[in-house]
Image 1 (cartoon, rainbow, N blue to C red):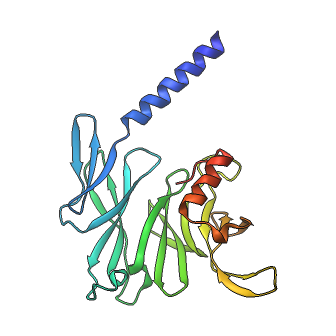
Image 2: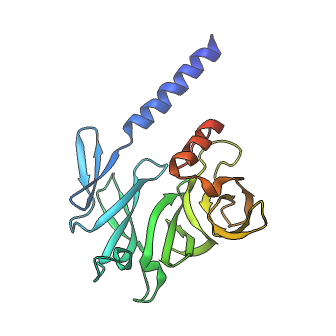
Image 3: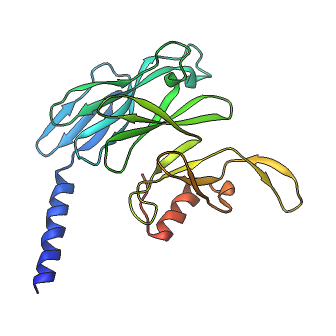
Length: 221
């Protein structure tokens, strides 16, 4: 009975904490935190996107567009920065941005918090097949390269908890011995070390990838 009561209590506490976490929306290009009975608009300029909530339940990372692309056919040429906001205070600030017009950090996108929320992983897409993942410290804004690849998310449960799920351009050899370039999924440690390549995943789309991790009983975001 005591064990059951403790399990129920733990479930109620966790459920209460989850319920208290705000929902994050983009409204007319601004980041808005909605909590019970109140809302905080973190930005006002209408140039923001891709908000993601930290495991702490109140810190938000998002992408701020500094300068739009001059060519409508190449929206990826817009210059962007990584911002951080707080749903408790309603304040936001730039965490990391490009140091110059030629700095590839201006192509930043797809922020993902680390398991404990101390870092934000981002994709840099400067062009072509060259895709880069970097890790940014929430406390200092210091950045460091992780690995060439495109981040899908961080494992939140399972044996790879805290590791990264990402695609990486790979020279693949088919059954006939032909070489071709593909983008299979890999599991990486936070320092960029390869743990494993997921067999056959070069043929997967986003739906197939989610089916795979759900079947394994894992959570990734």
